[in-house]
Length: 96
Image (cartoon, rainbow, N blue to C red; front, side):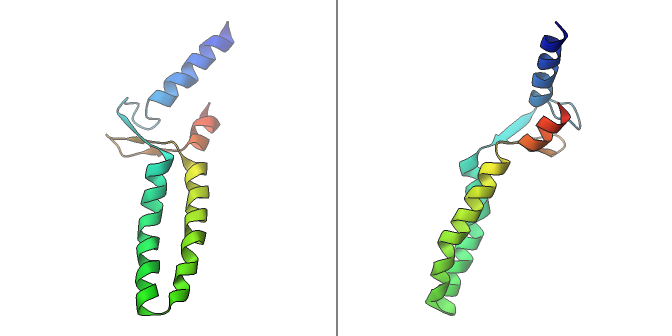
């Protein structure tokens, strides 16, 4: 019986902010996080291609690969709209 209560508590913690204990969380998925990570480096690589040298186009697949790896590792992010605290999946499993 205690295992069931513990499972309910960890599920409750996942739905509430760990800092302010409010339930107003927004979820950032893998695609959104990948877009936020990648848009500025893509623009910089394209601008450098026109300004400096076309070799900078070779960095775009590497940027995409690295950002996709980090987005897959860190998502789904949970962000509190009240206190702006961000919780990663690793933080939620360490607290449980």
